[in-house]
Image: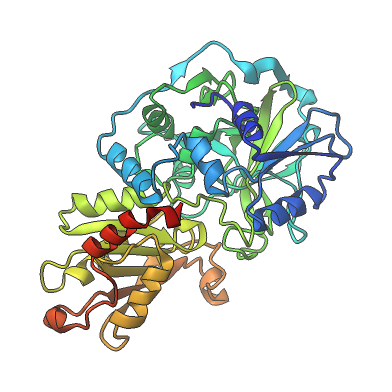
Length: 477
């Protein structure tokens, strides 16, 4: 089922028993804490209404895709597809990519309410303060931030945290190396403000794609249209000219001036690493020139939590592209790829059928270099044999424990880009803005030189397992 907007997605979750309605919550910490408690239990989505101090209909939706059920509904993944099959499907789609440009329409539901000039007031919406150490109220957790490269003219959609500073001003945090960061710097270097659109509630496919580190020049609108099999409807922004998702819940248009003109203290904010890793820093802002919102608007909340890496149980946002890139550089024998750890960004595992001396180390080095796109990204690259399921962490740990010789099978390579959000970064590096990290390469394969002499695995043959399972299938029903 293809969802045209966020509320259709919420309705479907409700129909299958994966949504609870909560009335009367306080935006001050209570919404955030309830979201945290439900996430710890892998529970259903939460739709908050009648929020303290706000009229009925001004809502917040959270905890939608932490569970595999919610993720499968959001992206229309059939129940019969396994997790690895879903990742392979995305990889195959990626390799056949043909952009589907967005469809420009004259208007849409997001234009039901238009606010400009002195009437602009971001406090009109029940923006939560999600965590008790947060430095402010964050409207942007499940946000799509839209910018355009001033030279190449392509449009980027990304997910970056957004704090409300006052009625007409938002923060514009973006880690080093992110596309929005690069684009806004180009505008500033030209002596101009950076046009920005921010959407705070949109259909799940676009929101999901905005979290994927697509290559430079590949637009998220075009990729979303391709994956959905249908263009995304957009409205040309009256203020910035940027595309506005026509079915979004709440959207702002504005301009980000150079930091020398206006920048403000932002944070701290409890991040997806599970820590307050970046403290308070002066960050760029966006001056809001217009607000558009639907009747009974919904803020989409995806607050980072210690229990929840805010991404997906099935890592469609990292694995398909890593897998495809490894194959594109000509690496043979790859049987499976997975990424474990926070937000499925930190520990890459590649299963290979070893074919030549040094094969495993070659794969580890490339996986470390190719996995990018966020704080802590790819700190660990593990290569395992083709009898190991890379998506099964217990299987991977077994290989680490029994096939890896720490003396000869582990390498540390320094100097890779990370982010200020990395809590392990020493204060002296942070002061110098040296946002680099080391990566660990681990060969957890049977040693090439004496692979044939390695101890055999204590497991029944595939043929015997199938024969016995088929005979006693009723026991596993």
